[in-house]
Image 1 (cartoon, rainbow, N blue to C red):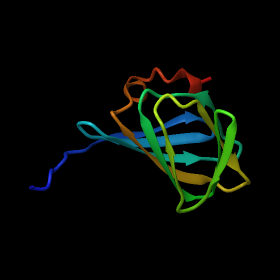
Image 2: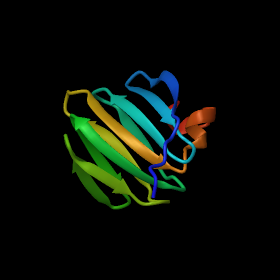
Image 3: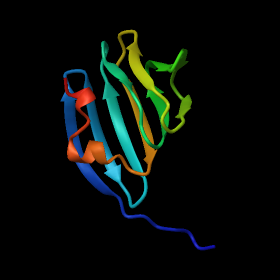
Length: 119
């Protein structure tokens, strides 16, 4: 089977809150989001209709998944199933660098309707 080639469109970096910045590349069916979460950043509980893969590159994140709490550190990956309520919080005083992969793409991040991150 021949390799499939994707063309990615990069969306300019955006400061969503004082402690949360992101940059996105969007393909036909996948979306990769580069996240910078500064100390004190808390992402409120929310859910997606799709699967989310989070890969922490630097720092530590504390994820709350329903009634379970999971700490994810550098080099670790967390798979969040579709419709799973989850929240995230930076642990410590180091900025977290993380990227998330979404399939299908998140329309709410493209059209700016992700109000839970804009309060």
